[in-house]
Image 1 (cartoon, rainbow, N blue to C red):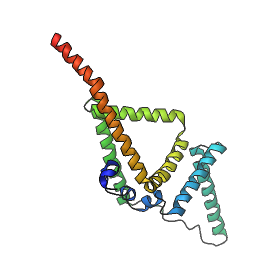
Image 2 (image 1 turned 90 degrees about the horizontal axis):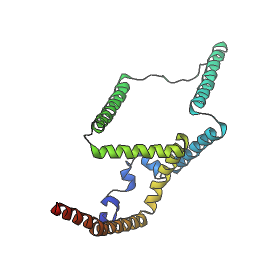
Image 3 (image 1 turned 45 degrees about the vertical axis):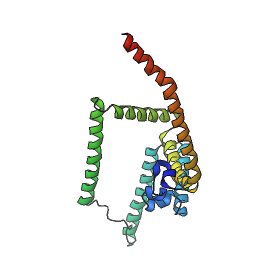
Image 4 (image 1 turned 120 degrees about the vertical axis):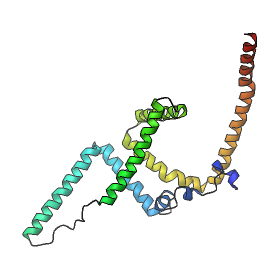
Length: 209
């Protein structure tokens, strides 16, 4: 199929659109063991939260407490028995890493604040409706499920839909493009039949007035 027969007339593959790196390999199941491992681990985490009644904060606190207690007892027993202490790496953030993180956060937060200001002052009507639609959608989805289930579902979708699309993209593109053309035809007919009559009625009203 040529680029004109693809969705959005794209010329790159799905793998290339996703970056073509390690993340793209995982999402496209080119590293099957890694992809399956992520799905199994996230499923196990989701089941732990759903069935045990743990919250994210309580689980993280419990795990950190257990880890800290093990390391503390290991270090104390090693000192008594003249054994080497726990092999911990250097826990250190370099100034360069901190500056890069701060610069990244600053640029994105400033962009968000700039857009928010334009929307609040009514300077960007289209962006206002987009933001309103996204916030309504988030509110609607949030009323149907919790953030943990939503996160797990989103991960499953991200690890399955791109791979399935790549496998059946010829069929999907063909039928989606057919549907888009059909919708365009229906819109043209609606514009001619309904909106045309409205425009004609408005013009007649203006002439009479």
